[in-house]
Amino acid sequence: MATAEVNDLIMRRRSGRAIAADIVVPAVVIETMLEAARWAPSSGNAQPWRFVVVKDSPIIDAARSALKPGNQSWANAAPVLFVVCANPADDYDVAGQPLYLFDTGLAVQNLLLQGIHLGLVVHPMAGWDEDAMREAIDLPQPYRVICVIAAGYPGNVDLLPEDLQKRETAERSRKAPAEICHYNRWTS
Image: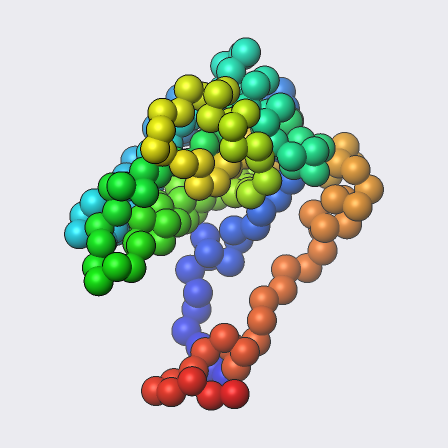
């Protein structure tokens, strides 16, 4: 199937895990990533996303400890965690369809692509204890943690656990277009 060229940032985006623990991410880089997220589209321009940038001890230590062990094995090296939150009550409701999660995902993608553009490893993840993360960042009710993003400059792959080294260096793969695309009607 012939296609036009896909934007290089999209093709380079990868959920890497090798992050340098000892290189500080400058405030201007963080602010630029947040600005990119801020300009994401949203339903009814509701902009339901909120970002808690976690980088200072002891708060980052508490946020790291809220991560599930599998994520801690690599994400604890990240000098910055973006805790992405949203309030379900801030949803722009269209015929009962909850859209705040989709809208927040659009903002996350902007943040990720901007981070890649600026030379960072940015890895969105699931896998945290909601109550512990809520306590770590003083998240008020009814906000929910939607995802956590580890961010930092590229690190040494050899410092990752062996199973993650293989995942880090494996070729990226995606489902074939025929598996995910239908034209005019759903086809089996």
